[in-house]
Image (tube, rainbow, N blue to C red; front, side, top):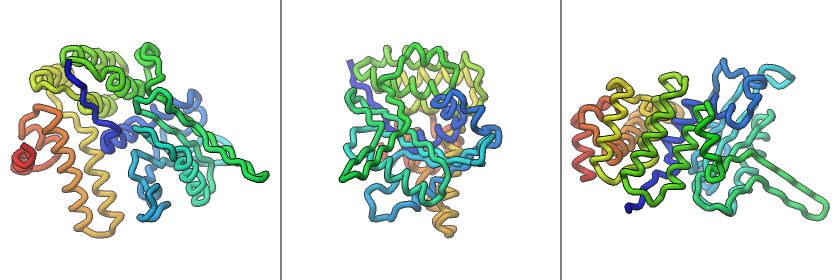
Length: 311
C-alpha cells in the first residue's frame, strides 16, 4: 500500500474552479438559485476588494482560499448581493470568528445582503463549525453561515447529481476517503470519476476546469499510472490541451499587476503564476516540455530550466 498524496486547498486550483463553475456552485447550495439570481448576466469577482478590507499586519488577511463575488438578482428591492466563500482545509479554532469578521467588514463596506459559505475539506470528522455567537451582559450576537462538510457528503447522491460542482466534491471526497490506496485502486476510482464527468451534459470549458482539478488534486505516486491516466484523458479530449486553470492563473496575475499600477508588477505576477503552474504540471503529470509550455503559455526553454531546478 502507498500513502496517497493530496494537494490540499491549492489556491490556484480552487479559485480557478470556483470562477469556472460559480453558477453551479450557487445551484449546489441554493436549489432556487435560478429564480433568485440573474445568473445569465455573469458574476463580478472582488478578490482585490476583499483583500483591501484587511491591513497587511492582520493575520486574518486573505491567506486562505476565499472569494467575494457580486451576484445580480432577478427581483426585489436589492439589485445585487455579495457571496463570500471560504474553503477551509484544516481545523481552526478561530474560523467562525474569521467568518464573522469578514461578514461585518463586507457589510460595513457595501451595505448589501451577504450570503456566507464555508466548504470544509479537512479529514476531521468532529470539526464542523457553522456559527459564531456571543452573549455578554444583555448584548447577544448570533451569526450563522452556510456550510458543506465534504467528509459528510453522500457519495451515491453526488454521483447521481447532475450539478458539475458535485464532481469537485467527489474529487475531494476521493482524497479524504482513500488515503491508503495503491495506485491501481486510485486509478480505478479516478477513472470512475472521469467517466462520470463525461456522461454529463457539461460545457467543454467547465469540463476542462474539472478535468484538471481531478488530475492535480489527487496524485499518483507511480509515474506509469500518471501516463496511463493521461492517455485516457487524451483519448477523451481528442488530444486537446486543458486550458481552464492556465487561463485563470494568468488572468489573475494580470489583474494583480494592474491593481499595483506597475508594469513590473504585472510582469512579476505573470512570471510567478507561470512558475507555480509549471512546477505543478512537472511534478503532477508526465507531460513533455513542449506540452507544458503550450499549456502555461511560455517558451520551452522556460520549462526546461524549471525542470532542471526541481530535479
